[in-house]
Length: 297
Image 1 (tube, rainbow, N blue to C red):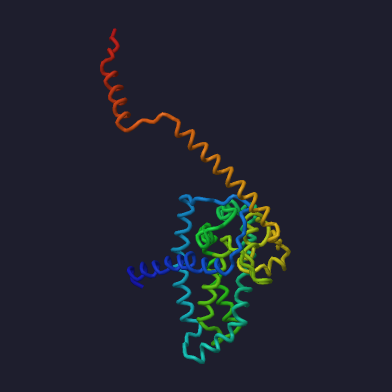
Image 2 (cartoon, rainbow, N blue to C red):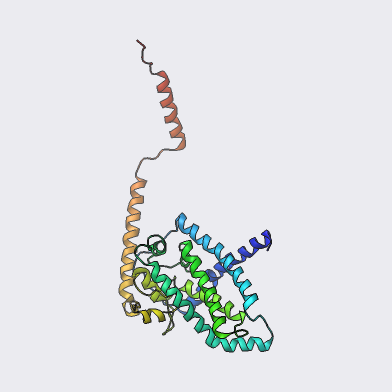
């Protein structure tokens, strides 16, 4: 791939991330109108390190997608005739859930390891600075580079294992495409306030709870392996949302009142213009020049 081609390809990946933020998430937001209330103050603004990690993740994703293309060309079925596509769709009914189960097996263990006491401050602590995710994809990929690279290439590992499990000619590239597309959507939704719940399959509240209670719910997409390993904890039910909403409103009111008080106090302080500063500076220089110099003995 040429240098210009690489830049164009990376640009397409950047646009793809916005596709999640401005199309996919709002679409699900219309389907599910209920929102998860804030039970902890969110990280309102992104710092330099956050923006650096987010853009690194996007750049790495371009390389990851390129490797996915190379893997698909060498190991997956690429035929797009009607018979091949229909056969792939039939197999996808079984293969896609299986793929998510395989992926989450490795991710759950990796995520659990990131919470080891000696490792947590070095890598995963950055992601947990956000106690109440709401930016969708931007909060999802705001992670340490090591964590992001391992998490992304775990998709490739899972797909490779699927080809070994099913054998040659049984895994279509269409499966890989749907896996990455759906996985990106679910990971993004996990970092929103959209209260999407698919019973026994997917629940945004489970991951939202993990951001506040980090010793549970390590799965990325499914809570299956958390249930197996005994690390699953149910999040607060919707019946408690009214209390949480009242508390969050009180917090926002107190925060707004405190901010207004600071701004009001700052407004009462005397201010000087640039011209006044220049005059003060000139007067100080003149005074210094007029003051008698000490006599030498």
